[in-house]
Length: 298
Ligand code: FAD
Image (tube, rainbow, N blue to C red; front, side, top):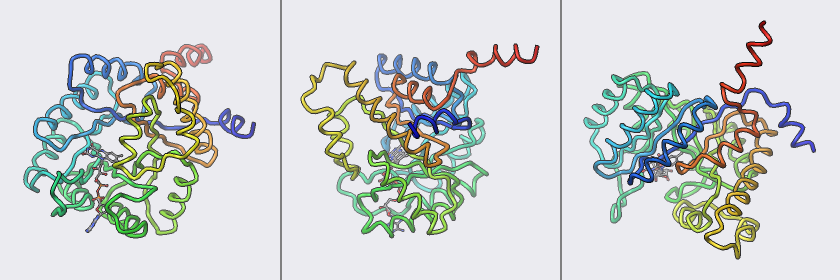
């Protein structure tokens, strides 16, 4: 009851949505249907991932440009530095700035197979971007520690370096144990990290894909989550969606009660679950709220 009551009192929640560049015509349709459905909720921004291989940068840019032009929602490309020279990165940043992009999600990117060292980390990329122009920069954070970091404290100090380099927001890796996020937020505050720590929410629609993701991201899947999906027919998308929505709804209720004001959704280019969760968080389409507001004025 207390959780639902605190939700009813919410007024000023921000949301943002993450998409990835589609690879097929069918995926392209799904993406734009989702963008169209979610844009009227007026998210703070929509971000587009970037795969560290040639060709994807252009696709990221195309999707970002189209979101920006067609929805008017601020669009934020992800940019990785693992596979590019400083000169290339400066040029990309200049091009983004010249085409009106003001927000970048700055990442190192995963190391290519067989590579164990990199010259640049995300903190250096943030610094480089801020030298090019006054971008609004988001970075990644890992409540359960980045897999390569020797320990949590090392990883936290890395986050502090990213903040000191000029980032203003950290989007977390997805997680399922809300207390892990809350402890991480406390530890970041205690370490003097002056960043908005935004929980990355992954509404689970495919348990098997989730297991794959969790394996290489160091994300703990609690026993209750395994039990939730255990034995469910893979083709039963409706039940999977209901269960996935229920899990995410429970999480955001707890986080909202703990004062979280911004949620970032890993949409995987699907809109249904994210839309439902946003609705519960009090987000309404502009067209749905404008008429009553107008009537009140009359
Ligand atoms: P960093 O902050 O540079 O950290 C990487 C590792 O190096 C950490 O273990 C850190 O502790 C360690 N480290 C940092 N500095 C040093 C140093 N000086 N010496 C030694 N160790 C150091 N990947 C993509 O390819 N494309 C995307 O679009 C993308 N989007 C993402 C969005 C979010 C919100 C998140 C959470 C992740 C995303 N990723 C993406 C994955 C990300 O690129 C990987 O997790 C990557 O391995 C680390 O990136 P980072 O920016 O966190 O790196």
